[in-house]
Length: 569
Image 1 (spheres, rainbow, N blue to C red):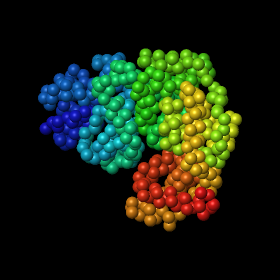
Image 2: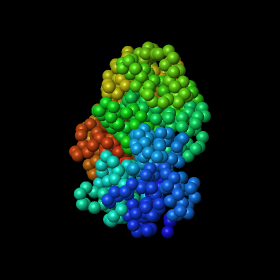
Image 3: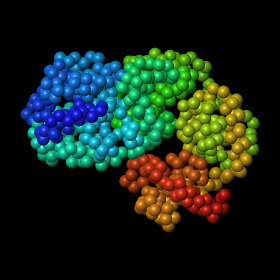
Image 4: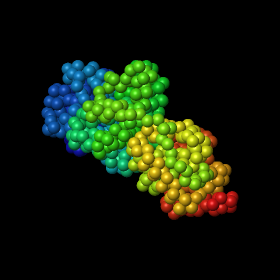
């Protein structure tokens, strides 16, 4: 009569599966199991449910099920005490102490994130989905879901409201595999099939990063910048870096993230800026509110955590440390002073602060190399950047680094300053200013950097110069790829030719032939009817990643023919 707990299953998930076997509401199943509970008219609230077991609950469970104590303990969040969590301050004799611990720790005892594809394959909910660092399913490579798309209630929350209401003791009983949240009034339970929820995919590296973090949470070895540390220090570093990112991360830092993660983290930053002072939304160390934001936190922290040595980590931290120092001066205090910082990070930041500062404009370029501004793209060739320039910009997103390299080429072509270089290239002034002010500080060997930029210019001449300025002007009029061009490319894929795909295709053509940032594509210059910027970015990502190579070549060929007709090669 007792289902065998799945490997790594959460306690609440196992109780729900037992309720299905017994054909009773979950609250009645909790009582049958002998859990120590608080009872009300229609709900039962097991004490410390899913977090830990009281002596009475453990005794009742062992008597009712015969399961070993280690198996029962393995389904509680207390399993991560000392690694991903610190449950210090939890008093087993006083349940009210759980409130303070929950507010402090990165865990969600009364809700859960979830992978829809995992739930389509089985009913067990893994325990790690309740950790604040849960972001990506390592098996399916998708962002975890947080909220039911049908009712808007957090998964496993049970009902809307500030406080969880406990387990139902009366019918109706949620159907297995559905949301089952109680709807307002007498509307019943939400019937959303969880396995049918849609979640965006992420790069493979994000899935690998999630797996590494979970390995440390399970007691595996942990290292920060090449130094072995305890699991507790590892997760303290993630939280400290998350707080630092909430303070100082800018658009260029977020550009390296998957669209869903960048947008979620940007929303967190805006929410914090508008939150009441001292409220939960204003706390720098607060748990990421969504899986997307958690993914952003892990991705932003990864270059420091995974740096092979202290020198590399120091270079990555340098721009953030500079901005933090500026905030300290402006606020006459340290905004992170109350947040524990592992010694290894504290030492790295201290070393960054001790290094001599360097002003962006002080990097003197070498003499010109015969380039005209019109021949310089907004993003230098990806291969040239990777082979020649990336090593001079550690911890930099490729798009941002390629942008700085383009500005540097304009400096070689005669521009006297970084702002003038941006103006000569007709580049977005605000973005260029952020790139230059942030990234130039990472260059430790100016002479080698400028030599690498000069080599990139030589390569451009050897490949034959292109008038990118003319291409941007001509393709600026192309907001959508015509239906007659797109239909034969998309029909074999089973895709309809929508106006959204026509614009995504135009953005592809523009990016391919102008070597520019897709965010600047004319197709995205005007608001899309009834479509949010987040949806536009996600739509582009899905269009580009799913576009077959043959279709991409055909679109590029159409763009080349269009340019030729307009008199540009």
